[in-house]
Length: 127
Image (cartoon, rainbow, N blue to C red; front, side, top):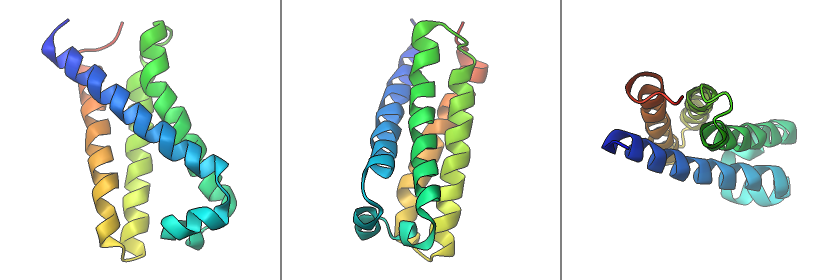
């Protein structure tokens, strides 16, 4: 196993955990509780909050399960693409709400997901 493959696995696992935790919170917590910690949830519908959480959970699972099970492993970088798009959406929402201090996390997560996209599509594809 080469160093790039190890690095990609570490990032995949950490990113999957981050998105699984964040998504689980968005789908399981009462919306009023989420509004206290995530201002953006006050500016959208509960359905959108739950949808974002569900997409984060699916993306997190997609970073790991196809690669580990060797079932449709091409879905791993595709899941990373979905998470990149999700984080672009998050960044846009923070900019629109003028919450510039809230941009750091989506940008870091976006860059990590882009690393997986690049690494798994081009450098060390899963087979």
